[in-house]
Image (tube, rainbow, N blue to C red; front, side, top):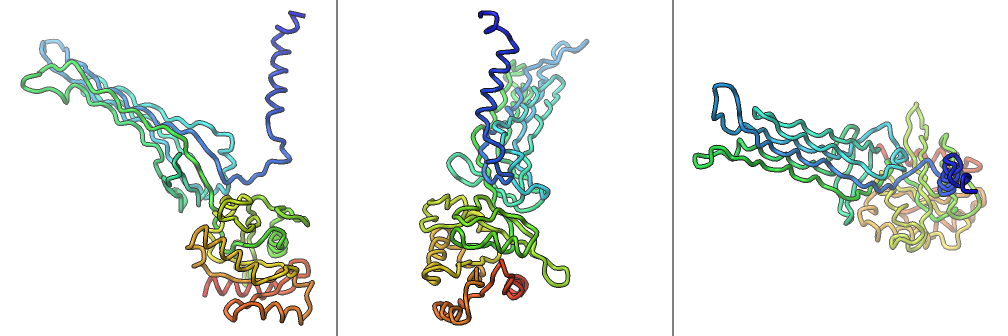
Length: 355
């Protein structure tokens, strides 16, 4: 019995089973990751040298200690080839190298190697207090999120007429350390805004090659989906299917903050109200209010109001729904199932995008 317990192979298999049981199931994991938290630590600066020059025929050479090298930075870098924070999902710690110490003959120590964190365009880095450190807006852009410590000064800097042979040097400065939160806000020309089960995923699947999950229940979509919509003369624009918003989303209900931040980078907001809604204009007002409370700048974007699932309506019902809205907000009617009104919808979107 004792030999079985001490068998290294059995112990290894037992530990492996425990580790696998703690991992999330693959079928529940999404390829789209828009939030990660990583502990970052920049490198310490190298210490200055307290070396004294000792050479043949030079009995009193004096101090010649060099400065320490700078510690490595932790740098966030934009990469246009990335579209999600998935590669960073299991990254827990990032640590840069420390700088080398100074040497004799006033030699400066080597700088510590910088560590680069590649992120998609549209990523924001925040510190533990929620303050924004930086924002990636273009490919190749670099932002230092943790600065490496400065190298210490060698004893050569401390010599004077009254202290000709200082036997001390400055130690390197410590690097910075802390948790950094990376949040991705997707970039798209058109963002679909609406309550759960309003037909947003159906529209994206109808006008692009994207294949979002479509089902007849609320919150089918839990992560944003992007699709390229083809237009006339080989032109195209990007459409984003954003998870449904509920009343109180601006206060964080229904993962509101996590979903609403993806709307901030869209040029146009397409409000989608299902045809079977009890009060179409009231639903629009609720959506508008949630966006205004979350970020007042969102309501300055171009807004298009549309009624989805129009295949359930006849001409009289369409007139009644249109009468609910003011003159400046006359809705467009379309159906992702029957393709009705999709060409007209694309025309309006293209006109808003390119004047």
